[in-house]
Amino acid sequence: MSTSPDCDVIVWGLGGMGSAAAWRLAAAGARVIGLDQFGPAHDRGSSHGETRIIRKAYFEHPDYVPLLTRAYELWRGLEQGLASPLFHEVGLFLAGPPESVAIRGTVAAAQEHSLPLERLTAAAARTRFPGFQFDDGFEVVWERQAGYLEVERCVLAQLEQARNHGADLRFQTPLLAWHEDDWGVTVETRQGRLRSRSLVVCAGPWSRDLVPGLEVRRKPVFWFPAPEALTLRQGAGTFFFDLPEGQFYGFPSRNGGGCDPATFKLAEHTGGDLVDDLLGVDRSQHPADLEKIRGFLRRHIPGAGLEPTAHGVCLYTLTADHHFLVDRHPDFSRVVVGAGFSGHGFKFTPVIGQALADLALRGGTSLPIGFLAWQRPGRTIPDFR
Ligand SMILES: Cc1cc2nc3c(=O)[nH]c(=O)nc-3n(C[C@H](O)[C@H](O)[C@H](O)COP(=O)(O)OP(=O)(O)OC[C@H]3O[C@@H](n4cnc5c(N)ncnc54)[C@H](O)[C@@H]3O)c2cc1C
Image 1 (cartoon, helix red, strand yellow):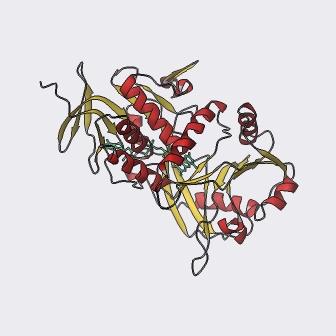
Image 2 (cartoon, helix red, strand yellow):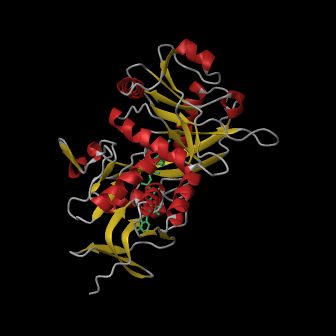
Image 3 (cartoon, rainbow, N blue to C red):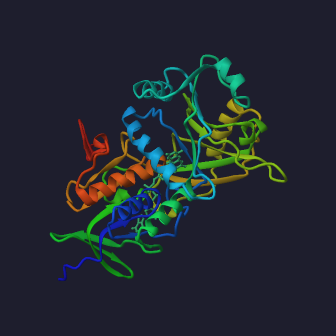
């Protein structure tokens, strides 16, 4: 068999992570072929729905903060030359009981990394964030360096950078099968066979075929009529509530004015039905999902309309500990995996893309991703089941 490769690296999946990996690989001079089963910035996986929160004081674990510092730099670099920013630094408040995971974790990460964070009582927050209702005893923390990313535009910008650096990006091209041999990796598509030195897997929910223990959940997202206080023109930012009944987050209204009614996006971070058939996900609006989100609205955003103006469904791919998996595959030396981004990965895409590129091209990275390894202290991926 010929040993002449078609490229250095094949990127499997060109959503959030794959678009970034293709960009960082091509920018490093690698010959890249990227494959996706759907079109650019499609709405069948995990990287759609207008917006994603970005924040630095990371309650999930302080070890994410150095990665976020690099991600912030890469996002700012990526948006240079674009007509409008990708990253809107409008701030974020998190609210909940002081002992809640989000409040405790945000404060701890800010302290460990000397990040600016304001701490407010419920009474102070009521004045500061009109439009929201905070229970007595809540603590509210405000991170001004946080905000939101325009998710589809980010994916498209990463794809464009990849192309500008010479990557060959092929859409409507499912990867049907692959195998590794001593020489490299061979991938099958309907258009034929491709050979490369290595394979970077960024298949999102579809990664669960390769990574045991991943769980995919259906996540409904709603848009509701916004009170004036939740509009960008009133200085509203993003928000996250950690409540005993669940974690809820949302974005300021980005439209409104003129004839447009102002609407804002709201969703629950916790919960979600398990998904078996990834291509047959039920994308209809479920009454139970709507009732739960309305319960949150009535209590915490009383001026909002209760009839959704739009609804969507997105997929979370969760590891058991909800931390990402970014590593070489333990059984295939030429395969690198970025998976299990557990509903909080988008803000990291450029830096994870860089880490995946380093792993594929050099076998290692100087980025601090040890805590995201396939085998972590006291835990291996099979234990996630
Ligand atoms: C509702 C929702 C809200 C979220 N909110 C936030 C947030 O506020 N902040 C944040 O940081 N993160 C957030 N996230 C998480 C973040 O969006 C995801 O972690 C991230 O988008 C995952 O990207 P991915 O590349 O792993 O998956 P995807 O973007 O889904 O990409 C996987 C790609 O692989 C392709 N693929 C799979 N199999 C094949 C195949 N055989 N052949 C070819 N192509 C294939 C798919 O078509 C797809 O394009 C949220 C996620 C959801 C669903």
